[in-house]
Image 1 (cartoon, rainbow, N blue to C red):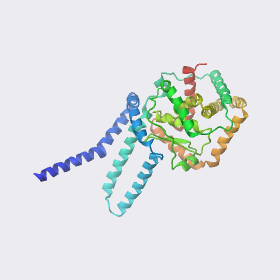
Image 2: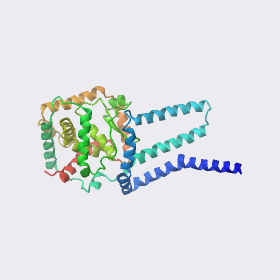
Image 3: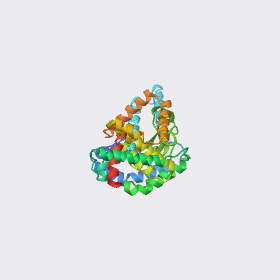
Image 4: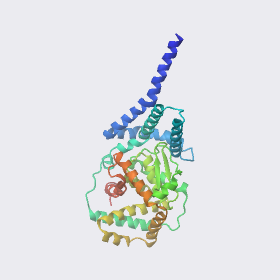
Amino acid sequence: MRRLCRLYKTENSKIFSAIFKFILPCAMLLFAFLCSRLPGMAEAYISHCYPAIANVLSSVSYRVPFSLFDVLIITAFVAFIVSIVLIFMRKITFVRWLKVLFSTVLWIVSWFYMAWGITYFRPGFHERFGIEPPVEDTVYFDALVLRYIDSLNKSYVAEPHFDVDEIDSAIEASYQMYAKQLRIPYPCGKRRPKHSVTEWLMTRTGVTGFFGPFFNEEHLNDYQLPVSYPFTSAHEKAHQFGIASESECNLYASIICSSSKHSLTRYSGYLKTVGYLLNNLYKISPEKHNEFVRKLDSRIVDDYRKINSHWQKALNPTLSSIQDKVYDSYLKTNKQQSGILSYSEMTILLIAWEKTFAPS
């Protein structure tokens, strides 16, 4: 009888182990796959389930001053190296190693999608807001660029006081104020800007910040100049609110920063937004671009030059090119068809937003 009980417990143990190691993560990946085919399902998940997940994950990571994303990546790397050594020492069999590796990868990938990654599959900006993509209108676009240049000139701040806590509070206040209009579930957990051990690599590749989905963490690169910091922070916070599209995060950062009462945050918003607008104008008409640039305050032109020179000193062209290609492939894998070029699409979204919610 005891032997039968032991066998029963052993069998149950194997079943529960199989469910935890393989069946459960496979079920989550199946759900993510369905979301990738059914945007409405993805939207429902992000609208109703994600805020609770973000609250739980960020409540844990918020209390820790260092990056839990870094801890996860370093731990996974060290564990992989140790497991290889154990195979050569014949402490574990190759078959068992494969099973553990497969189960670990399954859990990491399923964790990524359930914790945040399904945001890639929700309907796009125009569909969610019920806005038609704007038709080409050079007259309106020129007027928009001039209006933003004027606002940028007025918002210029000489030798701005830089305080991370003040900037963070200002951005949070703007997000809270615009939450309903932007259709984000504020507060959606907690946000605490963090640094990453990969900051040296971020600097060499020109990355100003990134969002760590596994623990809902915002990472910012300290190498960037103070005038760039607020926009980057607002961009990464947009990711935390369940926005995957890089262009849409840029739009949110533009709205949030340019509307802020905090002078440096407001200047950062207009500085970055005008940069995007002028880059797009240059593609349309280099002559008009040069004409509009001359309307900028000379001190603002100096700031643009300082930002460019600052990054050129640190940028490694080879590493930057590799990073761009890897991230481009990552975005396209997750149904962001424009890849890294989606950053420039912010102009289209800004025009749609201005015409719908801020008509002149």
